Length: 444
Image (tube, rainbow, N blue to C red; front, side, top):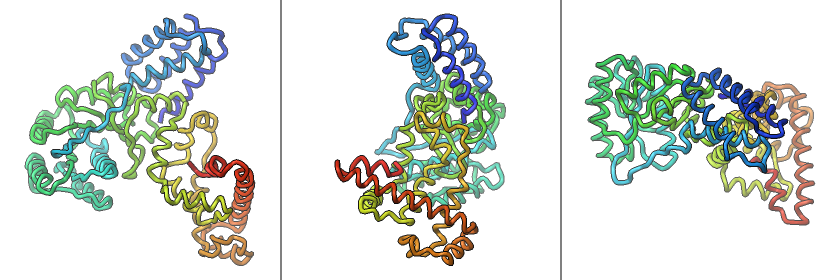
């Protein structure tokens, strides 16, 4: 996501860092490059024109400070305008505790509404709410079954009645939700074209009946400007309050995310980052601007860590590290926690100053699977006391994990090196307290 745009911006900023000051000539040259980069990222032409004019005015105006370098100042201006372009601040869902909360999902067929419905239900349940998903797509074959399957996997209830109209299903679902004290209802509607008058009328009728707190337009980010154009036409008939962009983990160039607010007036509120139910992120314009400009996103990284890191386990692990009792089982537990946070490439990109330096490094996710397989092939005793692993045990472990003896030897050698490093850090920490030194060994 945004990889090509990020690379282009880095090249532009690198040129400006060598300049002594921001002049009209070098700013104009930079803005030509910015304009070309945004157009190639499939950003709406009118949006690009307005954006570049705004950046140019600020770069040449009184806001330019003499205490920073031209490159730093230009990055600051572009960052602020990018964040403003995408909405400035995040738009969060405001829950009402004294009544049922309702969200309607609309969009084209194939945009990912049903999956988005399940992702949102899981996201809100994690926040302590009790969601009910409603299957109102009676037109697409297996649409109801798909939502039911997702609901069963997530243990989130789904209301469906295949022999009734979407309007009747919606009406009955709201009654059930109120009677059984659900805190929110997520209504998955059928995919439709904005030129289909009958289907658009049905959507308006559902919205009129449900009186939703939010109407989210689900758009496929892979379609670029087509997604923006369709969203604009949809908005003329159904004034949705926000946009859920799916497939942002693919090779989408990012133009939809940067253009959609300016074209429709509705901000991006969520983005889908994969097929898994938890592959969902609230959309934060400032953080996204930082990612686009290669500045990382440490806040989102910390939030991902907080979701998966067990505080009590972390305390116990810290105690083990202090006593130099860190085992392969502890290593496996930490590895699994990191895997829950997402791909390593994505996590590295969020670290300020690191993502851009390691952008060409191929992070081998298969290596982590290999390490996990090797440790899982060990007995409890072997994980706790790796020194007992002799030649015969190594051959058994390699056969059980589908790896080679050399792979097992390499892992054990790396683990020994890690233990030695921890021991040295403990000695250093002993002179000034364990705190900082020991915590530096923790994943996060």
